[in-house]
Length: 79
Picture 1 (cartoon, rainbow, N blue to C red):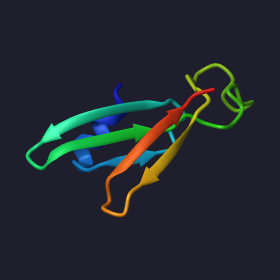
Picture 2 (cartoon, rainbow, N blue to C red):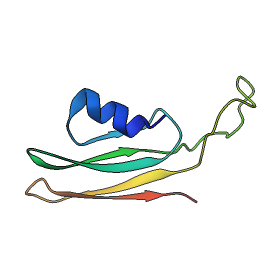
Picture 3 (tube, one colour):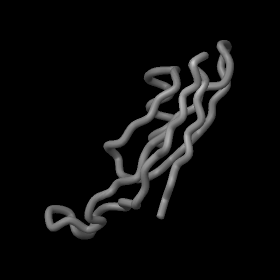
């Protein structure tokens, strides 16, 4: 499933989530303009003992720069 789309449908605003451990990014267009959505990878064990097989975890994190006017740039880094 596309988590960015599901979360966009619930919120309709720019967001970044770090709980799902699978990097995603998607841009949507609505009546207010462009809406950017991001999901971070993880910095943890990719096959933890409590869930060694049933995950799609990927390493990654984001670098965010925010300007004084509120605009932002997100770089998702996946080693």
